Length: 253
Image 1 (cartoon, rainbow, N blue to C red):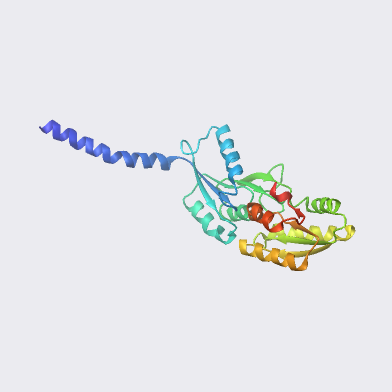
Image 2 (image 1 turned 90 degrees about the vertical axis):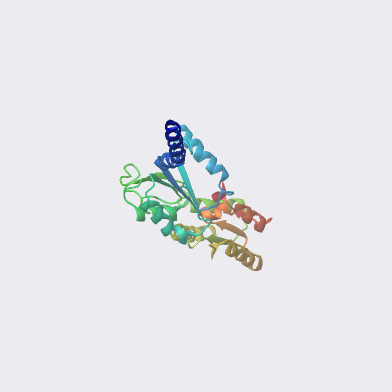
């Protein structure tokens, strides 16, 4: 009877310990903090590519690495709190694909946790790395060159619609660096092509709707969409609102 009681006590203790051990093992996995400007529905193919990349380097989500997703849905004002939480814990890596604002917020929050980014502008100019050949610091990633080719995109738009004169430029003021650079480059390039640039701002779904209502009233010839992760996530909304209007949407590719 004593042995039986001892056995039952040990069994009960082990059973109670199993969930704790499982949680401890799960917590021991390295955590990747993924911060994305869009939402899961809009980032399906990017998530698939991200997970494929993990698997190619020997990582399987939920087995030997944990990925914690933070979807901003264009709410860049959430970034300081999100980054503070990731740094405080801390996570093993912060990934900021397709978001200059998220990358800059991560860089401002930590000088030690590795940051893997994808940005539209020059990472040196953005203060993310020391140089392209020798990044240094704790950040590395890729440049999509979206901002650098803004003038080239405008030239392509002009070639596609040669009779266009009035170009509506939609930018996201919450993504200040990309917006300012795009506006500057387009205004510098426009006179040589005989184009006039009218800039409008949108940082939310409702403001995108409002911007298109303005287009309907003022009827610009073409629309140039500035590089921004939130805009890319709203590509279906742009297509519905744009209808048959010409849209320069290289950012949505």
